[in-house]
Image (tube, rainbow, N blue to C red; front, side, top):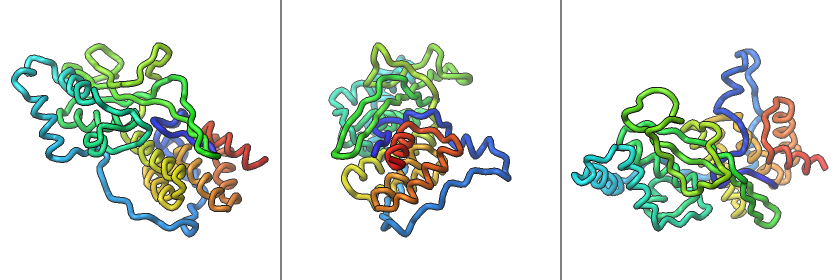
Length: 272
């Protein structure tokens, strides 16, 4: 089984793109979700971008300190993140802002989510960027995990309109490289889909298919046509021994040109 996780999906899918561009009479309807195959797990309702009052106080004390008053707001936020993340352990786990703050660890998506939490406290504008770079690969028994990269850009308060690809902005990124560059924008909703898909991937690796299914449902509730989410459903069905349900998902994606490298590769394996 192959799926994309770690930081960001490597497909060029825009949130809800198919649903928005298709006439009402021809809205795409994915195959029915097979709820009966899994035991639903209780997931805590959380705002993954939220900070605790103590965490907010720590950040705002720095941001509002008199000695930083002459530093532009977006630079203050970037400086705080740089100092705070100096001892950050960039492991593969996907964490909410609260957990990333407490544990000082997480992958690039975790850092982007934590950075977002700080930015939101200031009211500054920001943007997520998918980064064009070499993907990384990890293998866990018969699972291959393909990871690519995402970062976040903070815009200066002086710039209130237009795109963020302009001067007066700072990009928060621990993984910059000579051969990488920001490619396309990811919406906050898409980042949340990535978060739940990553947790699903981590649960599959751990062998907890019921928990993975519950995480996949969370992602699916945001965008029912997101390629990597559909791919996860198919992987879960196949691992439960119902290849016919996995086939129906991949066949739907194929016929409707919902493209995912991971899904195509898994579909080939299933057909073989």
